Image (cartoon, rainbow, N blue to C red; front, side, top):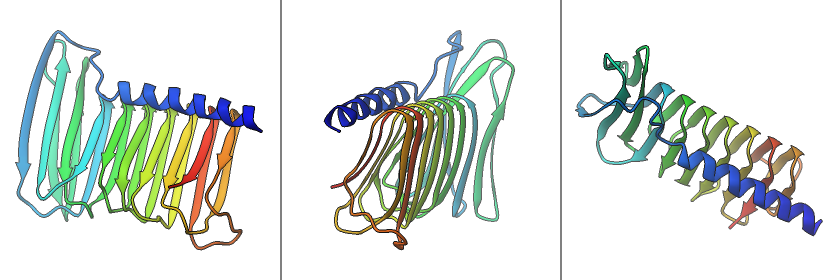
Length: 225
C-alpha cells in the first residue's frame, strides 16, 4: 500500500505542475496585446468560452477583465456582454489565443471552458463548473458548496477552505487531488485506472457531502486538512 500511495502522489504532482505551467499559452507570439476593462453592471454569473489560452478567476470587490491576446495577422475579435446578470466572454479568430484574468465577487457562479490552456481559481464561493482540454485546473481557498471540474490532459488540484457539499473532479490524463477541512464525513468515490489512490477523509456511505475524484492515468488523493 505504501508503494501505491507514493506512485499516486508522484503522478498527481507532475500532472498539476503541467497544468499550472500551461495556464497562458503563447502559441502565436508574433504580436501581443493586453486589454483591460471594468464591468459596471451587476454580475451574478460568469461564463468564459476560451479556445486557446488560459483562464484565471479571482474573488474581488469589483468585476474586472484583463485579456492577454497573442496573435498572428489580425487580432482576435473579442466579445463581452452582460445579459440578465450573466457576463459572457468569448472570441474568435484564425491564428490567435486569448488568456483571461477575471476578478468577480466571491459568490459569483462561474462556468469556464478552456480548449487549450490551464484554469486557475482563487477564493471563490459560488458554484463552479470548469473544463480544460489541454491544461490543468487548480483552485485554492474555495468556499463553494458545489464544484465540478474536468481536465482532459492535465491535473486537477482543488483546495477548500470550508467543507463543500458536492465535489466532482475528473482527469483523463493527469492526477487528481482534493483537499477539504477535516472532521466532516463524505461519501467518496475515488479511483484511477493507472495510478495510486489515497483517501484520508472520514468516509460514510450515504453521507450528505459527496466527493468524486477519478483519473484515467494518474494518482488520486482525497485528503482532510
